[in-house]
Image (cartoon, rainbow, N blue to C red; front, top):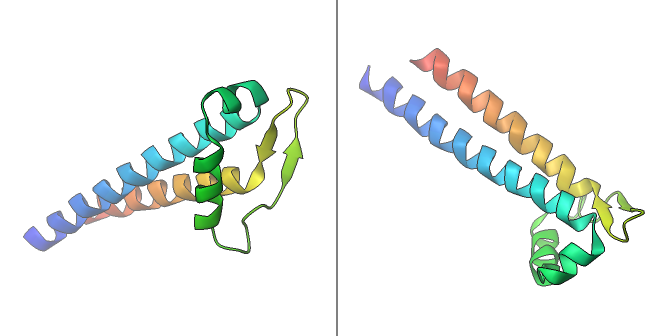
Length: 98
């Protein structure tokens, strides 16, 4: 019984981490849509490092120029969506284990 509860707690920790990362990635995607904001915050180095961390299959996929002078990163949006899905699945499995 304690093993199931420990597994449920571990899954909840993974779910929270995935949720926080997904929210941060969504915020970064929105910030990158505005050229002045991303340049003012000096995010170029961070975005390059984050792009290198993505799998080569998806990295750089779906870059769309926005009217505000920035770029919409579809690859970041897809990864954020997958992280939200991971959060949902971990939460559901954790509830079943309890």
